[in-house]
Image (tube, rainbow, N blue to C red; front, side):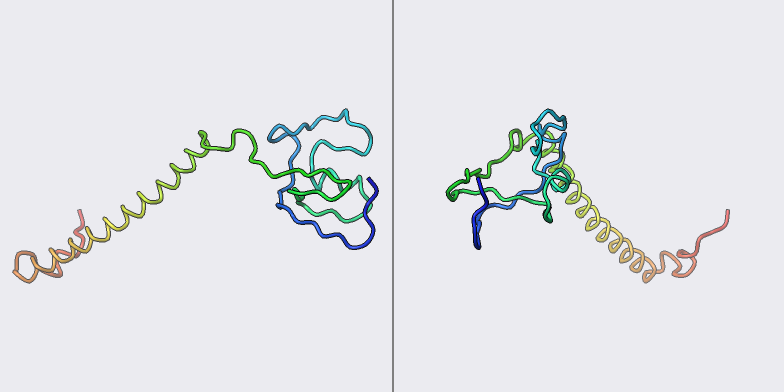
Length: 134
C-alpha cells in the first residue's frame, strides 16, 4: 500500500534484526526484485533510500492497509538442551560461591587453631610460619 500521509504512531513489540541463515530464515535468493527473506538492516540498507534501524516492530492491531504480525515465540525456544546448558552454567557459579565461602571459613579456622596452639606453646609462633629450606 501507499505510505500514509502525515504523522503516524505505531505501537508494538520491538524485535531484533534477523540474520539470514539463522532460525530458518533463508539466505538464498529467488525472491522478486525489491524483496528480502530477512528483516535485517544489512539486507534492507541497499533496497531503501532512507536510513534503516537495526530492529523492527510487530503490531497487535493494524491500521488500514497494514497486516498485523503479532509477536510469537519462535519454534523450539522453550526448555531445550541449550536452556539446560545455561542453567548448568548458572549452577556452577553458585557452587563456586559456596566453595569460596567454605574456604574462607576453613582458612579462618586454621588461623584460629594456629593462634591457639601458639598461645599454648605447642608451636613456636615465628618458626612455624617460616618455610624451611630442603
